[in-house]
Length: 387
Image (cartoon, rainbow, N blue to C red):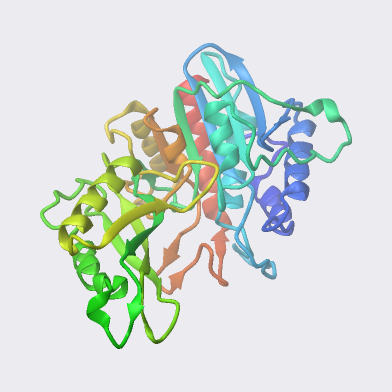
C-alpha cells in the first residue's frame, strides 16, 4: 500500500469525527485525504464522494459509507484495539478500501472509490450511484473547501465488479438477506361492544392473520447459503374506544428475504396468504413503509466468480488462518443496490463476537491489525484485477 497513507492513522482520526447526524465533517476529511494524494475526488449531487483512476475494463468499484448510527461514543485506543462509533461500521472498512484505492495504479481497467453518506438510513447516495437520480432526500452537502464547482451530478456507475466495505472479519461475503418493512391492515366495521355481533371485529381477525404470518414460509426451500427467510410481527395497533368493536387493526411486519424474492413478489404472496386465512368480511391491505428509495433486497453472487476467488486468495495470503472464508453476510447491506453485478462484502471488524453485539452497540471496536490485514488483502486483490 502507499507509503504516504497509513490506514490506522486515518481510522484513528476518522472515528473521532461524529457522523451520526451530519456527515459533512467526515466527508470533508475524506475529500482532504484524497486531495493530498492527488486523487481528484468529486462530491456529487447526492453527497457521494467519488474518485476514479485508469481507463477501460474491468471497472472495479470500492464502496462503503461514512455515516454511523447514534449515539456518538467515547473513542479509546488500547494497544491494538480502537473503540468508538464507526470503528468497525464502517470506518475501519473505509480505511482498508482507501488504502487499496491509493496504492493501486490500474494498468488494465478502472478503479473507482464511491463512498455514500446515508447507508444507515435511506441509502439515497447508493440509489443515486446506480440510477443517476439525485432528487428526493439527496444529501449534497459541502466538501468543506467552499468550492461550489466540486459538487456536480455524475453519470450512474457502470461497475463490472463491486467490493462493499462492511465488518466481515476479513471473510468474503457473497450473499445477504434483504429487509422489507410494512403494515398489514385488517378492516372490519365498528359497533357497540354490547352488541359485538353487529360489527366486524378487526382486532379479533388478528388471530387468523398472525397464524398466516407464522405459517408463511412453511414448505419453502431454504436458500443454499442464506437459509430460510423470516417474517416477524414487530408491532400491533387497533381500536379507538374501549367500548367499541374495532373497525381496524394494524400489524407491523419485518421481512428478512432470501433470493429470488422481491418486494413486489412478497407483497402479492402475503396478501394472498392472509386473505385466505381471515373471514371473508374482513378487508386486507398491505403497504410498505414509505421511503424515497428501494428497500435493501437480498443479493447472491456466485461463490465461484473470479472476484470471490481473487479476494479470498488475497485475504488468505495477507492474513491469518481462516481468513478469506467465503460465506454469507449477516445483515442487509447496500450491496443489494449493485447486484446482480458481481458484488462481495469485505472488511475488518465484527457485527458480533462471542461477548455479544459489536456493530451498532456501545462496545463497538475494531482490531487495528485486522484493519492492516484487510488493507493488504484488498490491495493485493485489486492489483490482481486491474493492476
